[in-house]
Length: 407
Image (cartoon, rainbow, N blue to C red):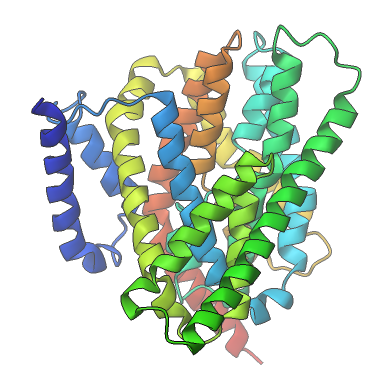
């Protein structure tokens, strides 16, 4: 009866202490994900064994989904739409050209390194690691040193690519499932899933945000809303967008991103004060997710890691991501350093965790191997992108300003 309380007591003390120095740590090379995962590893079974969260696939999936939904909503709501309208070519290139190329290269690498995988399983692995993560990329997309258009472009890419990958993942799971015998309608299944996931998700997100903003304005005019309840509205709206879209067969991630964009575009005044609680909620959920990742998943990766899995993870974070970005931006006039910066900052995190839980529950012939590869890639991304985010963002921002200042 005591152990669960001791787990939460240790976690709460850590949250309190971290909150006291979060501002100072944000100026260092240590990202939130590194600190949180490191805490989980140190205090978990692999280290001091002081916390023993009862982690199941379902509760890990729920926490990761809610974390990602909250972050997508607030990041989209904070987006500068005027800047985004002037630079939409890049995110659409990254999604329409870069994302399919990334999946294709990941599939080829998977078939080469893991010949025991079926083509569908190699495709599943590639799709699981194709989406970039808004949470791990936060240090870049919120850094004022980075040019506004690049920050907004990376934010849009990470906000939409996971939702786009969901129907493709489900299609490949249907093909890979041994019980699936009819694969003649794969194209039709994929089309229906795409239109359903994206269409329903976008419709739910936009409509909920429009109705929510209108109701808020109506109640504000009549002085019905208490000031301390206003920051709760975006939190409830984000969860409503996500859960409703998921329930109706759409993508909750698309719903949250579109809902956040819509809300941010409609509310011009006091947006920062309105979103402060939602941002804090996303940060808190992110902390819990990465602590669980460090305590439960990292030891599993360390014990089960193979050289082929490690090599695939390195390829996924480098060539498989960066080469498609270079090909996607051809003809746009984007300089090589900007292209390399965008290519490098494609971290893998929460979306891949959610996908991994889904695939593990399907119990494919090589689900365990796929889970190890994905977890290894996420761990390397936490380290590589976490340590490089602040210094590279600062360097790139200074370089961009020098280029802009040249006649």
